[in-house]
Amino acid sequence: MGDVLSSPEIARLGTFMSARREELALTKEQVAERGGPSPKSFTRIERGLKPRPTGTTLAKIDQGLDWALGSAAAVLAGGAPSVKPAYTQADIERHARLVAELQRTGVTSVAARGIKPEADGTQFGPDAVDALLELLERMPDGPRRSDRPSS
Image 1 (cartoon, rainbow, N blue to C red):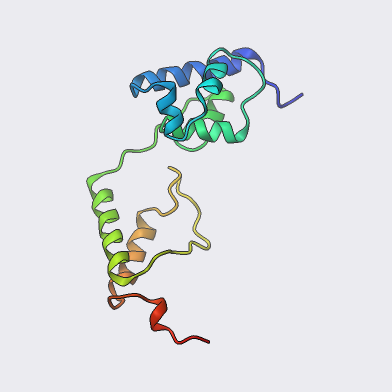
Image 2: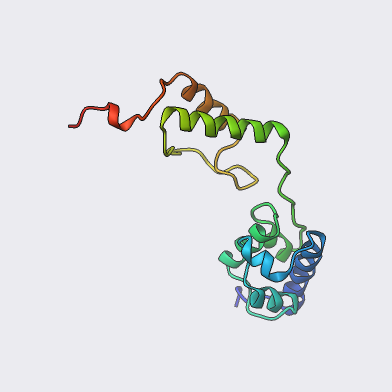
């Protein structure tokens, strides 16, 4: 029964979860609203109740508590969680430029073939955003799809 952990391991995760929730000054309901597990699941884990949280629940814990992806699983394995790095002013400005360029050029979606998510869980890291900006800045204004002749 490799999927069922002892209560102390689950309770350890619950202790870390409670401490992080208190650090963020959030209720269990607010954690759930941020993409975290339901308040009922949160309470079950805090109390160290089996069964082992699923992979989906572990990912929700990471999301709701602003932990880096894989942190809840690391706690179950005896490690410690990692907090997502805070966005810098440069990150915020880069994102604003990207949004403005996407709107200017009429691009409504971007395919991300071959791009792996960053360690913090974001799809596009700063290098990918900079490459997109460079490409978009060379494009003319206006909608793109309507400019193409239909086949």
